[in-house]
Amino acid sequence: MPFGYNGKILRVNLSRDQIRVEDLDETFYRRYMGGEGFVAYFLLTELEPKIDPLSPENKLIFAAGPVTGTSIPGSGRNSVGAKSPLTGGFGESEVGGFWGTELKRAGFDAIIIEGRAKSPVYLWIHDGEAEVMDAHHLWGMETGEVQETIRDELGDELVRVAQIGPGGENLVRFACVIVDLKDAAGRTGMGAVMGSKNLKAIAVRGHSNIEAADKSKMKDLARGFMELMSDSMVSRLHAYGTGAVMDSYLESGNLPVNNFRDGVFRDPMAIDARKVKETVRVGMEGCFACPVRCKKVVKVDEPWNVNPIYGGPEYEALAALGSNCGVDDLKAICKANEICNRYSIDSISTGAVIAFAMECYENGILTDGDTGGLKLNFGNAEALIRLTELIGKREGLGDVLAEGVEKASEIIGEKSRRFAIHVKGLEVPMHEPRLKKALALGYAVSPTGADHMHNLHDTGISSWGRMLEDLSSLGVLEPIPLEDLSPRKIRAFIYYVDWRVLDNCLLLCNFLPWSYIQKTEIVRAVTGWKTTAWELMKIGERVTTMARIFNVREGFTKDDDWLPERFFNPKDTVSGSRIKLDLEKLKEARSVYYSMMGWDENGVPERDKLEELDIGWAAKYI
Image (tube, rainbow, N blue to C red; front, side, top):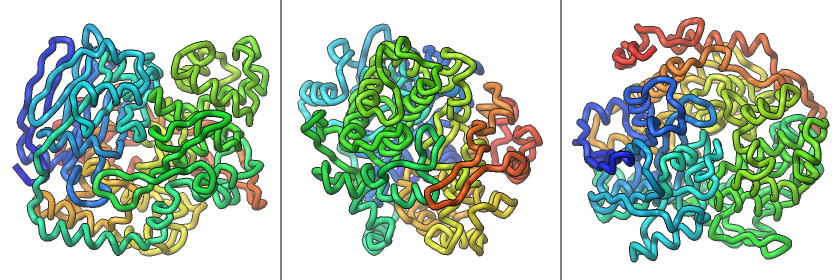
């Protein structure tokens, strides 16, 4: 067994009250690496086609990677995956904090949860052992109370807890898994799958060390990272976290306003991370082994009480609950973000579905009778907070919106569909595809639906900088203009996404500026494998292809690789420019992408490509 792994996964069948430990061989680890790679493999090989994502037949997978829990900054992450109840396709999300490290220290690289418990339970994993514990007394509790109760019961304040709140219990389709109260495996509805299994929490504690093959090299890499602390992006993250960009984003057109409809927002600095620091921030926290400490902690006393144990809003929440809903009240955004963490619902999807409801209301599609008297105009901070809570509780209009924008629009009616901003059922995150053309393609073809993390942000390669310097080691040697969506942009997109997906397999933070060469050195130092950048890129491509096959098997077609009509209409920016996505250019880009990926004209992976990726076995699932 290579260093960096335990060689064991835990399989828990809640229907049968059965727990067993399985051994994996080194070849398996090297081929699929961990994290998203494990999720893609097990979902593809073990799930029956077309199952209901909220049925006992779905499997919920928690997976660490070889880097998880090592001394490398950015290593405090793990992956969560299942068939998504929001999209009906491949579901996967990552989360930071300390939980993944504790799982590795407890002796396991992954957990596969099967079946459904007869009544509420939680899983207690500690030093190579696992127990299913009664959770009747925890059901209905918000996340803060659950963590405190579990730690008291187990007599250890260092127990780490991954859990759901009422949103997960109520099967909100975009419910997330909350770790350490502040961190979320936010996207694709993994918390709803957890709730469908009557699984309230997974508590972990371990005392084993995670050994690396080359300890000296690991120390050198960790020390070398301190030199990167002066990198402009890292220092900005350290000072403010994400979101210290609202003014420049508004000027360029990247800031979503009023359900991605508008280009003007009254005061972007009112919801900027710099304003957070000046007014409501009381601290900054971080993940395991990371000196950046980029996570905001906020406290508000009036007019709403915001408890600092739930952290604070990052960029996505500031924009989703703020500008995209027309809200510039920072305290209200902090309160809505706190409710999301208390109830375990994704702040991106929550803000997006509320923005959808607001636009429906302003167009007369939803009335006061539908909203229970709430005036759902853009900018109504009180309505934002109230509706966030109603979604978590599945009460009133919140019960409809808890289905996500795609299904909610089907319930509300045909006239609402043009305001439902999603891809494959997943609400679009807070970056503008009319500005960033490769990002638009990435939203369209992503196996999880619109995703900004395993994606290329065109602004990073439109001029020489850190991102382009990194890509130059792969042969992308010149800046590529923002408006470009030619094959050279698509080539850069594919290379970049391969490494983003690899990060999700290694479980290495996307925000830290490790170069591709350094990531290769990290994997070598951790595992002892004489790996290369080529091998690691192929892992990213392999996992993307397996996720694609999963979706093809579930009935997704090239028509699902598309964007809402709104993005093909122009948007004026405050700088005077007009941004628009060209429909025909995106169609051509999609075809070029399929071809470069070794997929046919319908986006189905070719047999020869599967063999080249060493997954010829996957052809039988198409």
